[in-house]
Image (cartoon, rainbow, N blue to C red; front, side):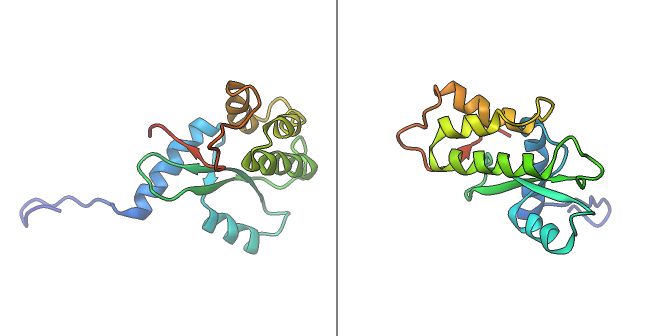
Length: 148
């Protein structure tokens, strides 16, 4: 971008915008690495469980995007992080299924089975408690983010 005398190289476009939104969501979801659905699928297909794991966290509509994303967390293998077992991840995903379907009381119970150090569950439990454990009447399973 720029004139022949002065040129600036920059990256822009939908992929860069998505990467920026995912990076911003890491702070809000309290996880270090977020993946979109396509990348999480590649990780699941190409990594064996001894190399790494993924956990679906939520279906989110990031600010400035038009299509909701299923975001997942990249986790180390259970052997490197035994405090967060595969059974814990399965329980979280059960809670996520209840959350998405609008069964927030059941979701809340599942999420409270997670270890207290696991901050990822805080993102959903906060929304559930703010609504007295009942999904809004117009709930469609998507969390709309109000800002970047």
